[in-house]
Length: 140
Image (tube, rainbow, N blue to C red; front, side, top):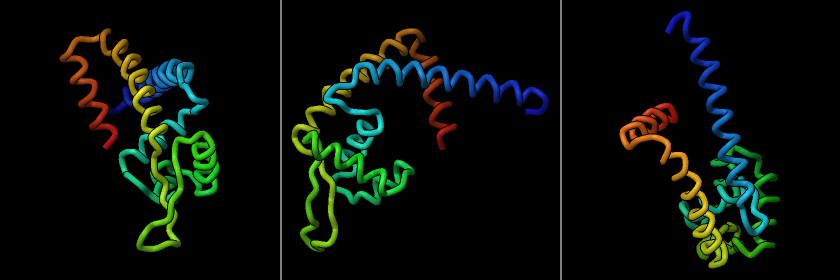
């Protein structure tokens, strides 16, 4: 990239941070049930992984297991997840979504889709495809 690379880095960082702040602020303002953004993403991970151990969630979220325990406690207290013992090894505690957690995810995903749609409505289909392809490539 050469001499222009610092300019790209600065533009990239500025654009990503600005976009992230806008999305998070808009979505956080519409979160329901007292959920935080990390809790919302944790519900997604639990849904996608199925019943899973807290350590697996901690690894995926790149946080310490103690932080996950606090988040799980809050989700349990709100009725979104439950802890249960593995049937094959009672020492293993699994985290799974409750029906209330599944319903909350459906409602929150509808809000997320509304927000994302407003952003994608500002660009045409080819731009959206190109944007997503580049973003996915960078994420790898």
